[in-house]
Image (cartoon, rainbow, N blue to C red):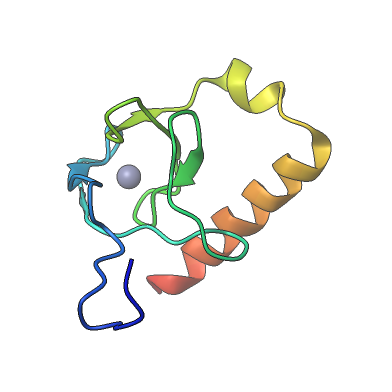
Length: 92
Ligand SMILES: [Zn+2]
């Protein structure tokens, strides 16, 4: 990564994908805290339908299972609930 924000592509290597729940095109991702690139197993939230998603090995997205969500640490679930609330406000 360079220090030139016009040359850095934060999506470099992250494919555009469609939400597996609502089918909206997803072509951007933002870390809930700080800066981070997604890795396999990271959680995401669709801004359109607010479904929880999981990045796969090729960084496409699949729907998170209820079991995956229920097994998360309490603090992580609180962060996800906050992201879901904010996602609902972004598109209003
Ligand atoms: Zn969606």
